[in-house]
Length: 251
Image (cartoon, rainbow, N blue to C red; front, side):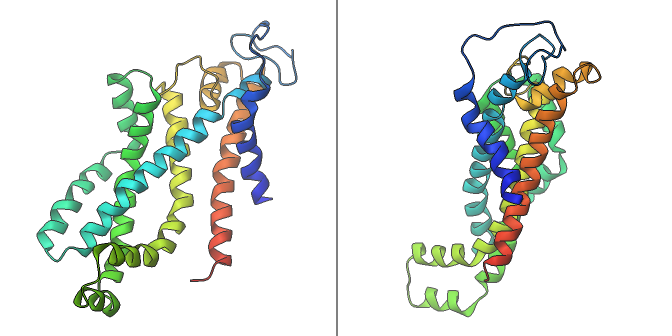
C-alpha cells in the first residue's frame, strides 16, 4: 500500500507527459467533458493531471538534494572543528534563517523575482539547508568524540578517510530525516506554485491546478481534488516508505 502511494503519483508525474497530445481541444470551463471534466479555462483536467506532476516532483527532489549537498558538509565541519568560536560562527547565522517562516521567504521572493524554476529550487534549498546542517551537526558531534576517530587522527589517517567514517556513522540519522525533508520540499514547492513562484499562473502544475480551479470547486471538484490528492499521497507515501526501510535496516 505504501509503495502504491508513492509509485502512482511518481508514474503520473514522470510518464504522464508522454501521453498528452500536442494539441488539446478547448471546451467551456468547469464542464463534465472528458474523464475528469474541464478546468477554469476549459482544458481537459485529465491531461492537466498527466502534465502537472513533473515540476512538483523534480523541483522537490533537486532542492532537497541541494540542501543536503550544502548542509551536510556544513554541519559536519561545525561539529568536528576543535575551535569553539568556529562552531559558533558557522551555526549562529542559521538560527536567524530558522527564525524566518518559510512561507514568508516564498512571499518575499514572489514579490522580488519573477517565475523561474531555478529561483524556486534555490529558495526551497535555502529553506531546508539550516535544518539539514543542524541535524548533521548534532549527529556528527557524537561521532567526533569517539575514541576511534581520535585514533584515526593520531595515526595520521587522511581527511578523506576520517570524513568517510563520519559520513557512514551519521548516515542513519540523515536517512531518518530524508523522508521528512522530501515531504517538506514537496510542501514548499506546492506552496510556491500556489503563490506563483517558479511556474506561470496558467501552467499545467498540480499545485497551480488547486489554486486556479478552487473557484469552481462545487462545479467541477475533480480539477481540485485529484491534484491535491496526488500531492498528499506522495507526501504520506514517502514518509511511510522511509519509516519502513529504517525499521527493516538495523544499525
